[in-house]
Amino acid sequence: MIDFKVKSGNPEKQRSSCLVLAVYEDQGMSPSTRVIDKSSKGVISRLIKRGDITGECGETILLPETGSIPADRILLIGCGNEDDFDSSKLQKITAKIIQKLQANKINEAILFLPEIEIEGADLATRIEQIIIQSAHSSYHFDTTKSKKQKKNKAIQKLTLFIPDRSNLNTARQAVLTGKAIASGVTMARELGNLPGNICTPSYLAGQAKELATDFNLKLKVLSETAMEKLSMGALLSVSRGSRQEAKLIILEHKGGGSKDAPVVLVGKGLTFDAGGISLKPSSAMDEMKYDMCGGASVLGTMRAIAEMKLPLNVIAIVPSSENLPDGDANKPGDVVTSMSGQTIEILNTDAEGRLILCDALTYAERFKPSTVIDVATLTGACVVALGAHASGVFSNQDHLAQEIIDAGIKAQDRVWYLPLWEEYDQQLKSNFADMANIGGHKAGAITAACFLSRYTKKYDWAHLDIAGTAWLSGSKKGSTGRPVKLLCEFLRNRARAA
Image (cartoon, rainbow, N blue to C red; front, side, top):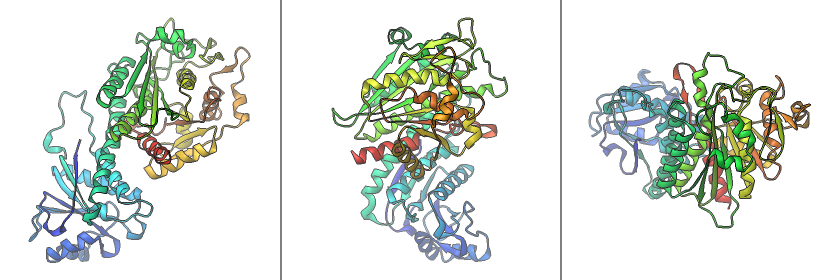
């Protein structure tokens, strides 16, 4: 990961391989850019006046010589209209800067971005956003490649320039927080990108064990035998078709008071989903290794909050299995009994995520939680409804949904609130069990959430359907690490309010 530092002083006296400076449309410059322009005898002003850079958001120009200042190069980044600059544009220009530095093999630079004011985002927030986006944009998956990324193509160090020396302590704390969240996002992405023959339920349990060791967390992993004793018939029905034993991973971060009710995060850990007997089409089935991104994001969040030493009790529960066709696999029409005692008619074996989640949600009751949030790549219907931009959120409490919405806006990891009306719940009726595991072709994301809601009557609960946001398809195929940022922001808000 990039080494991030903060620094203050005179902008024109900074020694670096590259100074990254902001310019705006209508020939505007940030305060540090004006100082350096004056010290370099107006070289930046002349470029702007000639139209070599217009200040359009994301536009760049690299100056290989800087004249009288000690830095080797200057990279100018356009920020658009100064009055309209916001966190979304900060993310955009940060990503562009990383791309430009990597393309020019510049492995060290000073960024003057923190001085750019953003309404609703203080200095600490801006620093965190820069660090998280820089780490995200510089991420490169080569774990399963024979040739690794060369060091001269990787950015080694980024220094964030702070105009006011009195803000250095605040900035240093923001760096630690930003790095912690970035590490959590990276962990989620790395787990999501690993192939199913490596990232098995046992592998996820091993990763949880490493987190427990590194950050002094409490870990418990339930075997199939232990789950049988708890009557987790729904979860175990999914793993029957796999040679990989299912695991229920429970990871506890005890940052709050001993009597404080915890927040419980439940993450779907389906390490490969072929659909079972209701076999998926072969096209893009390789992407079903990403069906554990809910579990990956929950583990990544636990890493982040543990590294931050967040003063809040948080418990992660990750039910993990594979869903494969086999002579012993679930069949359409089978009836299974969940841990709650409710029976389920399995009309489609490819609607397996809700089967492993419902037993985990029942298991969560024993912790007497203040709140439970489950995170899952649950339905293709949510992808159709919301695309890749927003995750779907459902909740049995409007105030909880609003907390998540607000956290998503601040973290630039947005969600959209969808209903859990009785009319949709009626679609789950079965002639042969308490409920069916699907509700027909219409409103698939909603009926899936209605199914889960039947197991969450004893606590405040929200469900995040991240099927459209957890990974990208196409030429940029890969895990995104969402919604780690959102979950971290939500938990930090809870800790502040405690």
